[in-house]
Length: 577
Image (cartoon, rainbow, N blue to C red; front, side):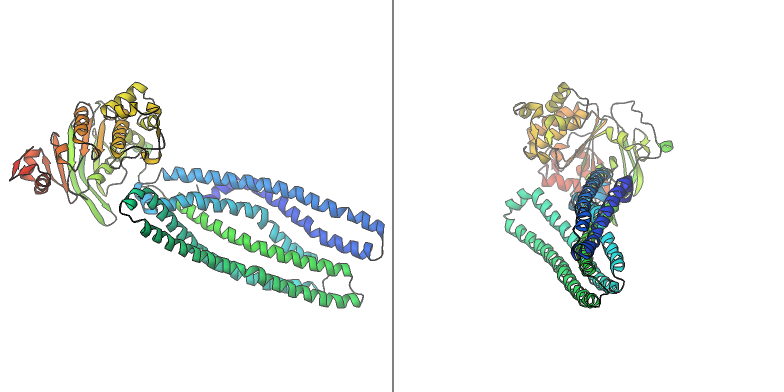
């Protein structure tokens, strides 16, 4: 679905508001014409009855216009708010469909701007289009038509004025549109800096880099301000330029109209009506400039929102007739990886990975930084699409499994422990919504988190702030481990998820995990954490360098030996484990 599809859902409401506003503009155009008749046939000859009979319409016309404007305003608000609400829902749904690579390439600040700022601009654009974009053209065209009706001799002045004013305001609008593109990019960058500083506040303060970050923000803010000032300067030319032209045209109307009045070919009421119509054109054009600027913002917002909505995730459920039904005969999963390769763009990360993990086993993945460990984990859950090769769970190709079913089979404890705003209970229930309190406490016990949770006010209902920042790093890790255990999946993956724990707590958790029926895959930089694994997989430069137990790998894998030596697990080639 695109923005135009959402707009079509409200087309009849928008059309109704448009019609009511056009009728209000038509009534406004009748007022100068009526005034001319009152002056010519009532005030000038002193006909009081004529003034009374026509004067009542000067009360009725504005009242009717006010009522029509109220109806238009109601429909404009209804359409703009419902459209904005629907677009935000669509964008949030799309955000949850996108691949990790797509969302990372767009950036969180850009996505947030599209959902909030661009959607707001679209709402304002819709409201302005219904309320003013309908009114301004009617006033412009109507004033021209009425000028011909009032005086065909002086109507060419209006044509000349419309051409000159239209040219000036078109140039100003085009210049404004060019500047608006740069303003949106500058706003995206400001949002990016703000998000980075908010998420990295502790790191920035630990390095005493606040002044540097403030300077970066001020530079970006000055650039944004500079472009806003440039836009204001361009738009500020509209009013004085149009006012100068209109005053010049009014002078021409008074000059030539006065001559016609002196010759008896014209009446004073027609001159006043023409001056009013010229002022109507001036006001309508000035409003039209503002409308065009807002429409330009809205169109830019539509393009950016459509760009996000048009993204098609590459990782999707297979078509129903190619989908494999999931059969779990065993509580633990067997994992087979066959000739798996993956690249970020042109950069190869994994190359021809072949692995077999038996169900119920305890496996570990180790390797130097950037060896591809986390990438391999992400491929298991189909967060990324492999460049080539296959992954099988219990003999079933993951590419042929529904994403929901696949991810229900795996519990992942991510490298960076993160909790959602809410309570401890609501976070644990992400693993399994129907879990009982007894099961939640059991998972907390297994994750060595029950003690500190029981001491919190509210226990399971203790509040969790954004990202779980009201807990320490070790507490967050234990809570995310508990969340994964609640799920009771066939494969439990811990992506360096024990790094913030002390050795005693880590040992207790590993002992508990060893008693689980699920297959366990532990990614770790600490070799002491993986010594008891059934098999240790050594990744290096995106390839499997060796697979085996600790003593075997010391002899088979140079990189494993180097890691063991750096962590004081060997001395002179002898294991100290």
